[in-house]
Image (cartoon, rainbow, N blue to C red):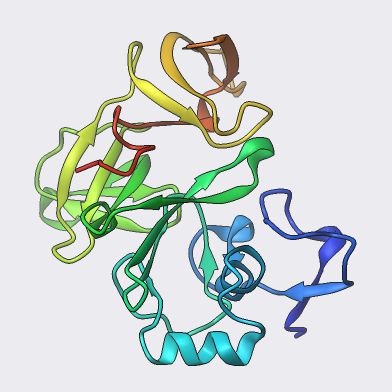
Length: 233
């Protein structure tokens, strides 16, 4: 199996130039599915902290870079929406956030904000003991004791304790950011949720400071007012 990916065929969310070279790194197995960007691409092409995969490997071997508070074993580990990148030696911390056009960008945050990660609840299931398992946008999950969560809610999970430290409910009036589509990166409040019949996607109308836009429900994530600035719980 090839370890490289043609640049022209990478997902639109990947922050790479498509015509400068033929190939780039291929994402390994892990979270975020096909949209996940290899860590080495973020370190090399976005931040410019390494020149090649060997330098990236050295960085992760020496805990020079942490993802969501933990060590990483593979330079091709997929990085995606809302992941937290920490560079302890540099005292630098970033949250992966949508850029214009839906490309993954990095928002610099402080050390306190880097201690937890935002997750969109895609659905929930009941597991043994009657407990609830929350399934998240990146393929991860979390078992909780309380059944107070619903699909499309957002939760902030502490990286060390793996406990929910904040819960943002989905609904009209909620503050959201679009993470895909032509309005990716835009922020506003949900003014209306339109439930569509059958298998059609539900849509939301979002009011922003500059007007409003409409998009599909799956494209928005609930945040709080301090999220973009890096001061969430």
